[in-house]
Length: 50
Image 1 (cartoon, rainbow, N blue to C red):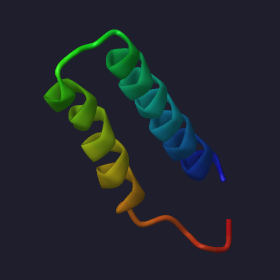
Image 2: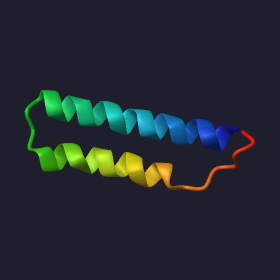
Image 3: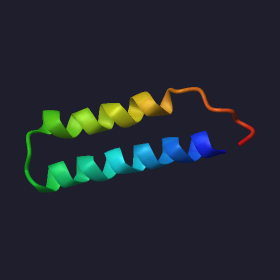
């Protein structure tokens, strides 16, 4: 349960970081770094029973 929560918090913070970069007008490659980070975290194996 703790691992899943930590993973969700990391995904959330990367999403917020991506939004902040987008609103600040940073180049899209900087925004995409966060997006790809979230996608990479979602591919990590997590026990589906949690």
